[in-house]
Length: 541
Image (cartoon, rainbow, N blue to C red):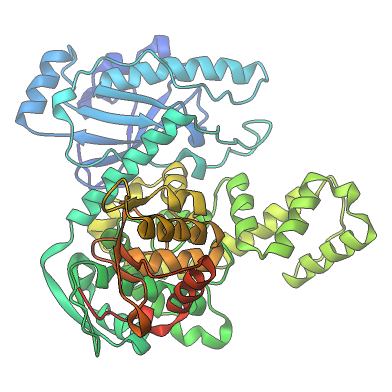
């Protein structure tokens, strides 16, 4: 197969020339599968589209499959496939949640039957039917042929329905608990592989805390640094980097950069105004740092809107409207978010004051409309797509240019909206979840002073909200998200001016004095530490 050609079409007439068996596209199945279109991506990766009855409903028939090559795999596939197509594949169909392993012949045959059933339902006027995960699966013909890389997929949610193909826009089904676990495991595996791609030995970076953004942008102007491990030395600080200093430096960097380059409230987009367009090229470097930070932290360093991230990765503005609308609510501040949510849920109850506020809301974004209940959702979707997909597109393109090619091929093109849901779980921090990650170094506690102070810590975490809770996590773990490992708590008996909580970010360990006599005293001193600049400096390992 010539992977240099832009698009290769394989039909019944040219199946023999292409190396595919004639029976794969037999006349008896022409109604279900007219054409198989293969879009070569690189030597081992292809996008496959199956055209149904002459109409390519791409949003649910796109499949990204990995072609497994090699002598052993080829021989095994020949022995299992009578047609000797010599191509073993591993594929996940996101539209019906079916996992298939086998040769290309068996994969296409199985998918054709499912497409035929769906096409018949569509002709009956029932629209697109999203089937649940099917129990019957293709035999594991190529189990020993699996690639070391995680299986890649292109999210079907990105591809919109063809005009007139269905009665409406496809809405992705809510994944069940088993699917969530699957996506979470796939995400962790992909992040571990991305982390393992960083090259040794680590390159030392000398960073000034007060000029952190300037220093890091300057360092990452070198494209090769995006694929190397780094070790951080904070100038005028004594901390030794065993991983925690670098994590804290990257977390602090994105906290500062977010205010300069990424507007938003709970979810953010890359964008700067016309007055700052001289800094547009910075987004190329920011894309490089974004991918490197994801590899180093094994998590996304900033909660960019899912829709915007899809624009950055796949270079498309056609994102599912429901996803765009959900992201837009997170992008807005609390007041506007509540106004938009009320207009969507019960427009008629807004009243004159509410409708006037809604009119001012649209005017703020340069959109003048006639407010009507029947069209308010459409107007909000158009506004959300403009703000989250179209407006930041040029900055997304710059960030994509900065991402190393190896990172893009291995990790970013495998990301789907379901994977992003699992990756963003770490940003949904609540006190109960943080407390569930707290462990005492010695348990059970027998010292009454330790028991008392440990109770103070529990009450403090329950009282922390929003930014204060994030600051606590950064103080202890160097990251502003749910920790991936437990936080160990130890105790000491320091008193006087030396009394304060001490954190080791490299080991996620918190040490607290037992000399506090009241919760108010404990909370006051702890909050002073969290809000002080000294808490951000490294004075120990």
